[in-house]
Image (tube, rainbow, N blue to C red; front, top):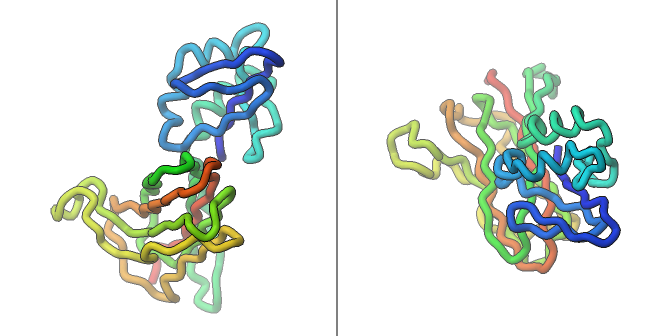
Length: 215
C-alpha cells in the first residue's frame, strides 16, 4: 500500500519533514522516507488530535480517509513497503509461485534506487507499472545486487542485470521476463530498480516480482 497524508484544512498549509502540504491536498510519502514520517512526533500528535490536523488516507488513490484514530496509527505504522505473497499454480509444471512487491515514488527530476529484498530462490519474472512518467525521456534499469555484501564481493555488487537502461513505455508498463527456468538466487540479495525522472511531476509506481523455491 502507498501511504498518503491529507491536509484537512481549508486555509492553512501544514509541514512535516520539510514538506509543505497545501490545504485540502494529499501528499504521497516516498517509500524510502516512510520510516522518518512514521516516527515524526508532531505528525502523530496531529493525527490523534480531537480535531485532526492531518489525516491518513487509506487507499492507493489517496482519496479515502481513515477516520478511526487507532486504524490510522496502525496504517501509518504497518503499511510501509507493502509485501504480499500468494501461492499460485502456473503452467503444466504446477510450480508453487509466489508474488512479492512494493509501491514506490520518485521525486520529479531525480534519480532514485528502489530496493526489494528477494524472498524466493528463483526469479520467474515481474512487472513494473509507472504513472506520471515523462515519455519518452524517463528511463530505468533493474538488477539483482548484493546490497549487504553477503557474497563477499563488496556492497552493491551487481549479480545479474535483467534490464539495461531503457526508456519507459508510453503505457507505463514494463515486463521482466527471466524465462521458464532461472538460476538460483542466494539468500539476502536485493532486486534494485533505478529510476531516472526527467519530468516535473512526482512518479508513482509499483514493482511486482514472481518467483518460486522450486526448479
